[in-house]
Length: 461
Ligand SMILES: Cc1cc2nc3c(=O)[nH]c(=O)nc-3n(C[C@H](O)[C@H](O)[C@H](O)COP(=O)(O)OP(=O)(O)OC[C@H]3O[C@@H](n4cnc5c(N)ncnc54)[C@H](O)[C@@H]3O)c2cc1C
Image (cartoon, rainbow, N blue to C red):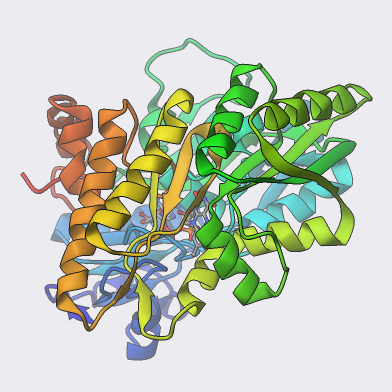
């Protein structure tokens, strides 16, 4: 555990009711880390606002005193995004949990602390869903998803979080509260400020309310587990399915190594070969034609088997996919996850990035199982390392760097959903070049005192 710089936060007692301000060591410890591999750092205080005006009062008081503020919701970030690396205040947003469904306009207005699964439970009686999907659906909150622009298995059909945000209420670092966007399907009125805050990881302001567009829950779903002899065939099948114009509800690639770890962890007994998990969504019989198209593309790419799955068995397989990080971690006691990468490449390059990671893993002699939301060109890679073996830790760092550079070189991005956080700042310039200077200017103009989640996203000037 690191210690950030110490900031005297006693002023918070004058800003919020006593019960909403915590200096307790055990509470501060809880908010010192997220789900990533990055080291934790103790904040000096944790505050839990219950309304927008309280967020505004905290930010304005902290800004006046130059005290860092790190927003925090579910704490499930995988890139250190929510770790208060400079100490100061953790702003726990988990208590803002209002849900106001506007079914007639296919939208919902929520507090940022609402958990993804809870939102979809509340929408289900209306036959509506907030659909990007996220494997951490039982902990990730809407505020955290907006801040990281998160998404998961279903983004290939329904889009990422950004695609569903109509309006945001945001408190700026100086305490001003602004509305960004409108509750309509489209608008051309002015700069799209909401897009600036989506994916900004709490470095520009704090989201206190969001209106999200929804989709109806499909009445029909068909799923299959498809196995291949060679990873290249599986990946080419994905590229061709997307190029054919099909919009699967989900299409996930899981390499043979990952299937092996999943079998060990769950006892599911899947064929340990490169595998696709395919799910098609629809509201009429057209879904059967979609299944035929997807199946024939897989068969043309030498699929070994296409097994239609549904009901409990398929849910177990999806659950295993959502828990795959735990399967990796459980594989060998002395091994730890050294990163959870989430590069994205243009869909036609998917087979190439899978091959490149295999080559890099072999070269550095490190196990790097991969899986991912293949239909989006998104690939997760998870190097496993014995943390007591300094040499292998260094090899992992080099492998991670080479993988990200390979993805960017292919026209892709260093991160499709986890954000830049602490771990990927060094690649921002390679990806965006001079645009990073413009990002620095935006940051400086909105947060001149540098109090909002310092140390994240942008490289140190
Ligand atoms: C097992 C596992 C599986 C995962 N699977 C996925 C996946 O499929 N897809 C995916 O995208 N991610 C995944 N993640 C990562 C993580 O769940 C997401 O990044 C998620 O969006 C984080 O939400 P959170 O509520 O936990 O936010 P936190 O981790 O608490 O915070 C995330 C970021 O948002 C900022 N923030 C929080 N609230 C606000 C607010 N109200 N206003 C402004 N900034 C705010 C924080 O400062 C931080 O920078 C996974 C994580 C785990 C542990």
